[in-house]
Length: 289
Image 1 (cartoon, one colour):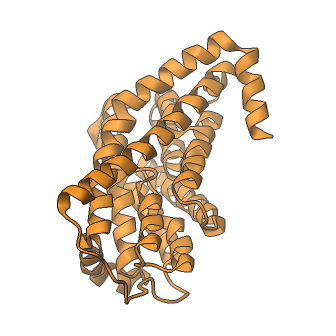
Image 2: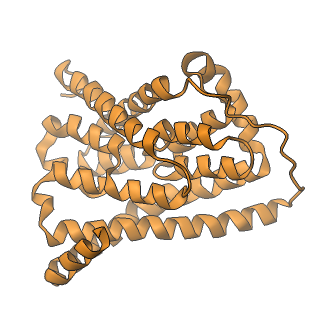
């Protein structure tokens, strides 16, 4: 049904949809691909090669006492916070495939591991949209607060993420890198397809006139359209970045099929509320002039 509605919209307003698709493609070339592809590739190699497991155990020495997050879940959280949407979700799905995490644990991890990255928030949202890296840094700090708030709620409860006992064949680094490049390339194509499609729909229906609605659908366009609101729009921008938008949610469905999303959507709502509140406090206390 959703596909039919989208088709009707694109056919009804072809010229505006074409303009929106062009804007979406520009966003993909300038922001999405440069910020996502390297992290997707590196995280895939790290998980498949076993290095991610070791890094996750190291990170969990800090996160587990505070949030109850085990090694694999810690690695997924860091991947999401560094790589951006949907790297964290893809890492969780890959951990299940590699035997590092149970399906149940991965579903809980999705509640807090799928986040936007610093390259997009600081570079695009902060420097490009608001003309300030300081604003970008505060947005990113609030984004982390949102993710950790969800982790505090969903990180505990349930069995350990580590399943143990996996048997891995020794594979050369070249093979790991080649497989990671192939899988990451396919994933990035899906991500860009979603960004371009939703950008076309937003333009076709002229939803860009309503930045909050735009942000609920596609986070990149939403944050861009919130720019003219200035400082007053920052709490909304922070909430949109943590929510991710319908486009990101579709991307998440694509990279981790078979995992229930009931914890995921609850976690995104909690993250959005926490990060938006944190940014509101920053604005009201004068941290942003």
